[in-house]
Image (cartoon, rainbow, N blue to C red):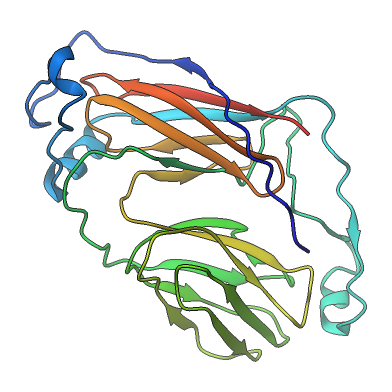
Length: 264
């Protein structure tokens, strides 16, 4: 399944919440005149302090209008996949909208991150294959961070990475096999993962040079923690509904809100 991304440039609805009290340890205060010339200095320590001491940038992704009906995927090609879904049909996960209009699986990234060094996290990011579906469907990972690929199904899968700026790979994973580890050396948006055995299986990985990204959950909500005070551009990406960009000003408390709305 190949979805063609429609590019849009839209300004998102924006609400910024600024507390009256400042926070310590977040770097020098920037004036209006100097904010466009230099970004706040960023280190591993003050990113952690900001992330633990503030609520972060949050928001919701909404779908306008009537969402498309989720199509039923026929899994009879693999009897084991069919058995997994004998009581509940396997449905397309391309556009997931909840009862309140929240849109899941939108990737959000700060396009203008503060300058600084961003150490590669020691923790890994997990991708699993459960019920003949990739879980999660969309994920972010820092450049050089370990992607740990699991197969929890009682059937064989393969994971093919269709990368442009990184080395493509194709891993076979029989049932019961150990997790496989991979990493990406370069930043790249929307690396498509697919299973050639079960052609409906698709996931997307964003390899990012900094930690300021998020994926909207089932309710459409997201949070990006640790951004110092300043002005930022944020991109929201959906695999079939396109891209949007919005502007955000983060106050001294590190908190703010930005919302995006998608439609077909």
